[in-house]
Image (cartoon, helix red, strand yellow):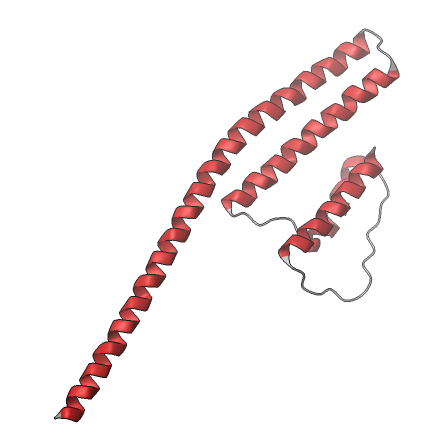
Length: 160
């Protein structure tokens, strides 16, 4: 009788512990969902502000470039306006990627470097090549993104 009581008590304790673990998992999932929803809300607000502002800036710079061309402005001024327009476009692209990261989208990685280089060659007509030496190995996400951004910046410098 005592043995049955002890066994049932252990079974109930095990069952209770399992239910507690499931409840904790549910709480964790709920907290993660709430955090993701908040990040999505913030991402939406950032996107609205940045996209509107940077798009407006890009349009203004296009107008300034046309005005500078029409009025025969110096080459230095036209170049500065052109570079400013490029920076606005790059800023808009970066803002979209940052907003995507807040929403949980996948960030660019080294695996996407070949496509980055193909796009650069297609868009600029510049003959650049990507050479990867050694065997690929997994990197922490921060290092992977930093290396991708470094290559992206190098291509931007080439375009200048």
